[in-house]
Amino acid sequence: MKTIKLSISVYFITLCIALLLPTSSEYATFAWKLIISQIYAIPALLLTMLLCIIFRSSPFIEERQE
Image 1 (cartoon, rainbow, N blue to C red):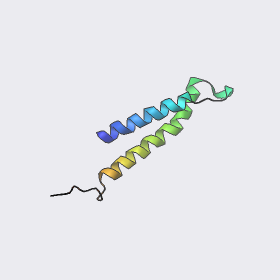
Image 2 (cartoon, helix red, strand yellow):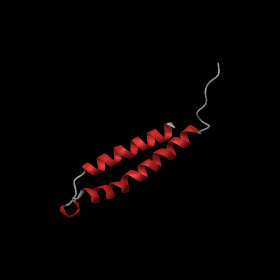
Image 3 (cartoon, rainbow, N blue to C red):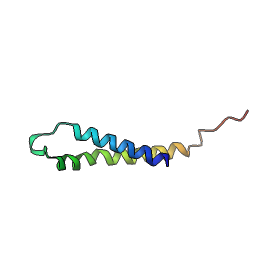
Image 4 (tube, rainbow, N blue to C red):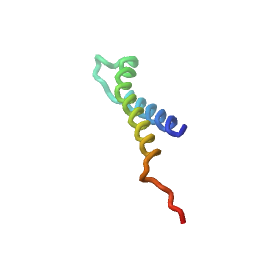
């Protein structure tokens, strides 16, 4: 569940940042900016999810027993 929450958070943060970026006058409509910002937000979502899954199941992270 942590993986999904973190990935969705990164998705929305990336989406908001992409919506705030300036565009040319031809592409200044909100709908167009929303479509283009998906190009940045979806890979960020997938990359975050992939990294969380990899680090969660990593054999290099082991608890020390003392």
